[in-house]
Image (cartoon, rainbow, N blue to C red):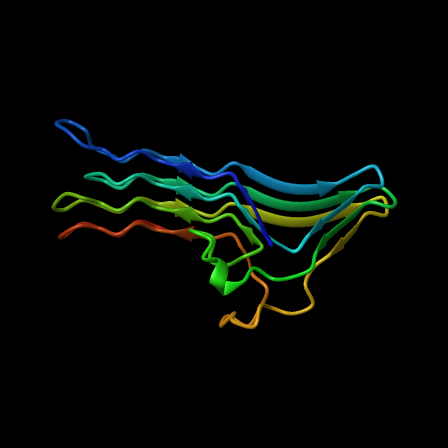
Length: 168
């Protein structure tokens, strides 16, 4: 089965008089870790640390967090045997094992600008003899052709004459 480890931040929607910008969504830290000689094993895993900016007259900022696989110390092992299946439909994860995307919020008013999206960080780390084993091949339904680990920023959409948000 699929294990989802999610640390997602979602900015609120800006509505009402005098409210200008959607809220900031800041992803947290999604971690799978093995230490002290322990063994952690997943059939498949999706670690998601996305930030999603809120909708508003001006879109809110979305800032990705960190998605991390870590094995520390001799005898420690972390294993993921299968890629994330396209049939799992993991929301906002893009079918990635590690995902730290920043999605800028969309503008909702005439001339409104989309929010900025800033990518976070993904990491696969071992130390002192720890071991991480990942799937040998992508899921059969994976049209991307690779096991995915993503950290990117996607700017939000503008509204009727505004400017699209920056993606970093």
